Amino acid sequence: MSQTPLPAPETAPAGASVSRHTLIEDAQGILYGTGMAAFGIVILTHLGMITGQTAGLAILISYATGWGFAPVFFAVNLPFYWLGYRRMGLRFTIKTFLAVGLLSGMVAVLPGYISFADLNPWLGAVLFGFVSGSALLALFRHGASLGGVGIVALYLQDRTGFRAGWTQLIFDACLFSAALLIRDPITVAWSALGALVVNLVIALNHRRDRYIAT
Image (cartoon, rainbow, N blue to C red):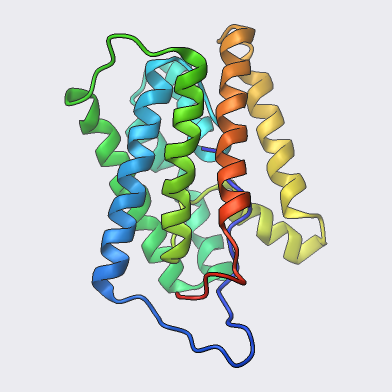
């Protein structure tokens, strides 16, 4: 699913005290985030849509090959953990690995418990955006992510100065262009709406100057 660049380790404003999340708080945050993200993927794949970043790549591969999303998503993220460790540290990498594994497992199981008799495409796209945006916010605020392109984008920014946002934008543009080869333009357009809503939710709600717990 589309997302803004991964947050750098949180730092508190001068004079502010930082309260680190407990293990239980991290566990519930990651479970909530992965659960909502999995629900968003169920909505998206029911409508035959895609999204951005590695989740979108995994969905596109799944559509093209018939392979299940869950194992593809888990495998697609494997190369990114070393960069995650180098850029964000061991704590972030372990949490992200757990989040990706949980999401993969939930997406494999949830379709057996959730079905839609009728779901309007534009409403489904917006609902996906709201649900997935809240999922990513929860993961970010507990020091995790769903891996992937955001890590590479930050790594390239550190090494070359090329803005992380541009790297993600180029990747998503290529992804949505490729989607036109196996999905009709209307479906791709609704997919873009869902990705836009995800990014708006994160952009409007993920404020490091307001949320400093880690």
